[in-house]
Image 1 (spheres, rainbow, N blue to C red):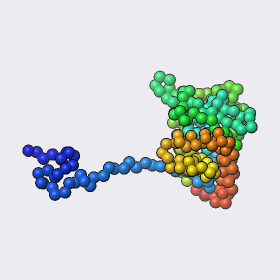
Image 2: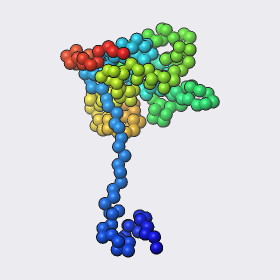
Image 3: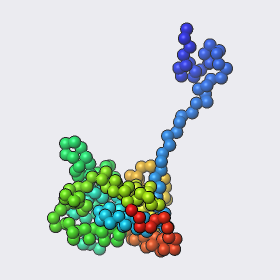
Image 4: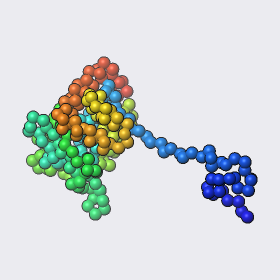
Length: 252
């Protein structure tokens, strides 16, 4: 009779006495390794900003600034319309109501649906983001519905934006930075500046939806995220002047 190595046989007594030790007893599940995204340190924010500014690519610069100030995903920023933006009140804010998607039938387009229910939210704008949006409003709002139009006046492909980011960060000290890294940077800033164990715990969480729920809860309690980010970025400017990163000069 052929000898079988199936798990059921090796799970009990060793078959036919051919082995003295059950080899399956030492087998352990292989743990999946996850590549946890890095976050920029406070001292790196300004040098990274200088790298992006050196690109002279207005859309790249503006999207990065808005993401840095608002924890938006790239496709959320690219899906913003002027009807989602409030700039003429004491506390400027944006409404996250859609995403950019691609399919064969419609191509690249905006859908009035967020990734998850918790992704549909309101975010108070810090100065870095509100300044960008006011500038773009003067340029585009009268003629186009989207905040970040392509050269053809359409919604920008997320893949094209990511390609542009990779191109201009290449060869610098920040060639690893993605929009996800920027999101984690803001999560760290908020956690360090808001006295909330929940916000702190969230930093190691794989699911960013919990982070977003914490942000919304804080805003509802009149702890303005915009003010927190404004202060953190001011501190970043001070730190970067004291500790310049020579590798992050304005390179392309």
